Length: 253
Image 1: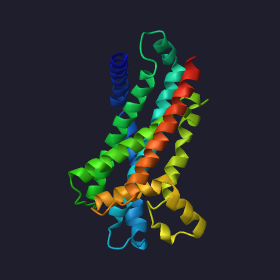
Image 2: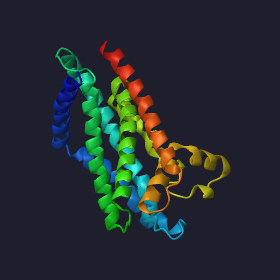
Image 3: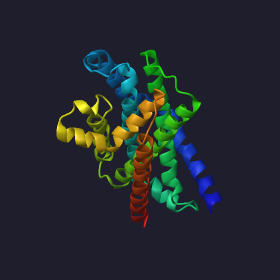
């Protein structure tokens, strides 16, 4: 059964990736907004924000990477919605393939597309002065956290992709996820925020993920932030996966 599942997923992944290569503008579009945001904050607001001895582009990049992912997963919901409306799911059900492979193909496509966008954003950040002395292990840790974060958000995206009534509804869910980093330590230190907002910012998932990435980039001790970040990513991933699979089973039953 597992061999059947992996083979089917590989075939369907190839199909989804071919769609991506024919519309590379979606990846470019995903990267454009975070890059524009990074340019604006670094060159317009950066001089007014005190981040100590850390350059603002170094301080800002982890949050921008999370916004890049939050922007990119909207396309996953959109592609799923279009497949649902186009009847492709019904055709797949009539074929001897593993049912869950259809969703996994979309999820892995999202992962590939988002990783490309993340690389583009990091390259632009390097041109803007981002520098990191992090070693290979730290970079691998950064990549691992971003992959987990992408998978978690992508499985969230699967749910509106399956249940939305319109194209706008399929992608609109991503707006709160894009906004969440603004209420975290991504752009400014949380100790500059007023009381209730500071409490929320310090205890929501984005802050621990941003802090972990920032410490890895700067070769600082990651402390408990990395474990809290991993716990959030894995927890969200498991819950979103269970809800998405239940939603999918109801849709195809």
